[in-house]
Length: 319
Image (cartoon, rainbow, N blue to C red; front, top):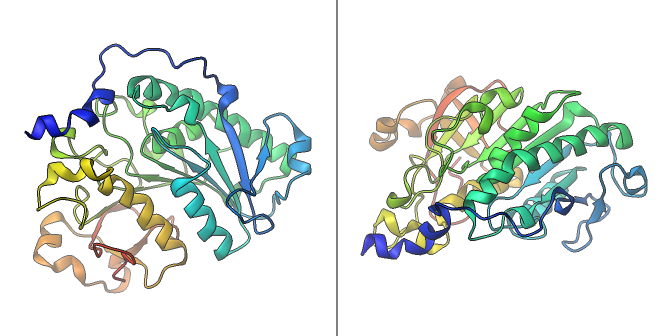
């Protein structure tokens, strides 16, 4: 029964003979801009690589921080968590929020082909960011790239493909696990991709365990809320394998937590401890420098492995 229930998830991931994506090219990667001057969901401005007029004619301000958001497999840049994140960011301050839409190259059910597109899309985004430095006078020191699932590995590929500067910061939200476990670091998100790489693990493990995230460390600092595999409220009757049947609930919690951290209070304080410490309650006490914040305000000096607990519904943070 367990395998039968998961067959819909496995059919795209386990395809042994990937087909080429239908006529999609890197020209189908879109760059959508929101700022405090155009905050409505449908009020984005599209920027075009190598078209300086699209930047000069937009609300883009190179002096403001730029946050780049990269969705994962089967998603798009026009809705979902990138738009939710945009709303919180423009509420928090004067940000350039750029959502990368690569949906034509990340279509379901052909997961293997989408995986193969990861380095290509990363290269395209890197080229765009170098263009934005010239066309928009982007302050590189205020740049962050944040990606979910396959988008986390695209974020790493962005850092690997930049020629003119180095990324200051990447946040990888539950980086995809399938097809990446046995790849080299040059083919997946790793700490060398930016000056600071934060990773939030919420669904790490094997597909037959109801997990599609990468469990092992991929960053300078790796956060494992609730142990990093199944989040509270994401399984039926306590059965871990049901997690994927409710829309990849735990996999999505990584971006739910990151988005809440932008404006939420009291924040996601995480302790440098162990999985056993999380289980016996010793991770729940923070003192001095033993704890750091997970999420948008994670300090770039943080390093190592951190654990924390959350609630099972919003607001998720326990402080």
